[in-house]
Image (cartoon, rainbow, N blue to C red):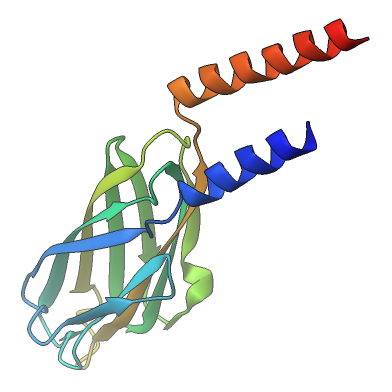
Length: 191
């Protein structure tokens, strides 16, 4: 019995060799020139935006990011943590990230007067059934204080970190159930 359990555990580990993957489709918009993206650990992606992604007087800038995330084989994505960094002075910053299938939408809004830190981000849970998401992110900066001659807002980077959980395949579960049943029947006959 112990040998069987060890074998099943090893099979489960062997089946999870692929890592979570990210595919960047596009980054567009009035503030997108000079953007950069890079892996963030083994389960995330970070988008760094250029120094000129700043709104000045009477300007609106935006960046639209489209990427795809695929879970490790045999796993489903169950959370995303979105962490933006930047500052807002006499302007607004709006961040919306839509995950399809779903859609599951993360939305953040920061009004003028402070810094955007990780606390401005958020953790969004998913029902752990989807192993792939098409993600559309919109970051909008706008000026709302017409009386101030130097409105200023900036996003320097935004990070998406995903977590995943094991989802056994129905056929594997059925096989496992039959195997366990057979072991119990065999053990009963021995007694």
